[in-house]
Amino acid sequence: MSTYPEDAADQYRCIELVLETTPDAAVISNLGTSSWSLIDIEDRERNFYMNGAMGLTTATALGLAISTDDQVTVLDGDGSLLMSLGVLSTVAERDPSNLTIVVMNNGAFETTGRQPTLSKNVDVGAVAADCSLESWSVGSTEEFADAYAAAVEHDGAALIDLAVEPFTPEDYPSLDYAHSHIKHRFRTAMAGDR
Image 1 (spheres, one colour):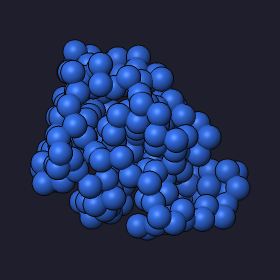
Image 2: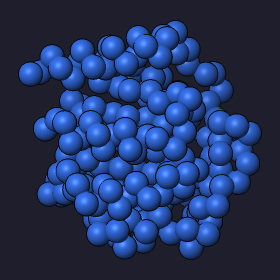
Image 3: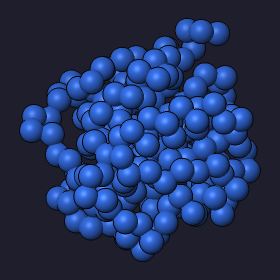
Image 4: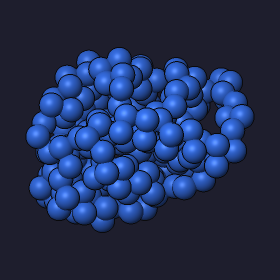
């Protein structure tokens, strides 16, 4: 069963650590807070914001990881992942060594009003391990930094179940792009290395 420590990780800082640790990674972010934080930290061509596609973030990243040798990092939410939990068995079967899944586990559907998810009843790290994925369950920013570095170095797909405090930005960064623009910008950036 998931627990939320009083000093849970700072989601914003953890996303900064992803970009600092793997500056050339393709980052696929779940709708809402993960995307808003990512665009605020650094809006870059290798960010793919999954606005309006809840439940598909990890599956989309899996497809990308299979098609490239570049590091692919997923910033998923617990509610989103629970909508398609079976994707973890597919990730484990394909096991791309360049895929790291970070589950921002705040126990809530933050974007739609902080309604509780069922993640309190599901140990996401244990589910990943049962699917034969390397996994870590962490609850602080410092633990995340170590787990993320290890996950990226791991020779196979990996998942980090990261307990974070619920977080709503004071100001919502503007996504002044059409979905088609984000898709074309991202695809161009990924194809540019070929």
